[in-house]
Image (cartoon, rainbow, N blue to C red; front, side, top):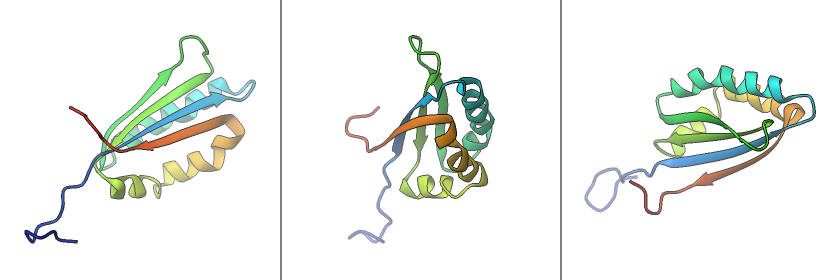
Length: 107
């Protein structure tokens, strides 16, 4: 919706941080799933970053560091075939904790 100046308001980027703790015996399968998603997610028009990190102390724990241009880009991401496949499989592979974050003081 246009603002008072008649232009579209600027959209804030959206950061997603997801912590995934592999279920027993599922760490390699989880890692393979995440690694297969990386190039697909990075290729999405609204994606700025999609990185996988592994906890140094707990090898079966992974952190996804995602950055999108807007809420609309996140919504589009969540409709992709690779995300829908991920959602259909993730609960069997890992416990998941995800946060959607808005910028406060970001450079």
